[in-house]
Length: 155
Image (cartoon, rainbow, N blue to C red; front, side):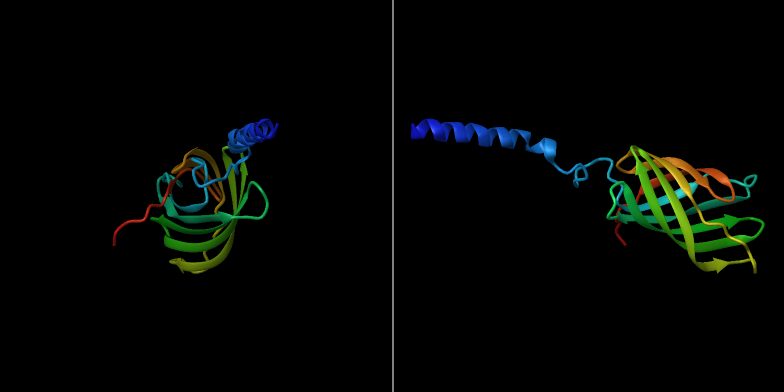
């Protein structure tokens, strides 16, 4: 009788182990669509080919599911007014494979034109893989944008 109960307990335990992956956290380190981390980005030229933007973005966890806190540094280079470097805070919201980034300017680090009005840089993106997102800059202008996961290099 004892061996029968022990055998039944072992089968129930094995059943729990078999089901465990179904209950695992979907945002584990092996999730290929996890977007937390550092990204570099670049837009296609805009304003008639006169301007282009590049920069970095860091996405960090947020207490609410599907949201991320983020920091963004954008470098805009335009032939008509030079280079602007802007540090921004942002909130990112994820809907499936879509990510919406809404920014707020924290500091103008560099601007060549006195009194230049700089509009926060917002993006709409689609997660395409663990290291690539593609979408658009949606700000004072709209331009295609590609985000690539930053990789540690050797300096």
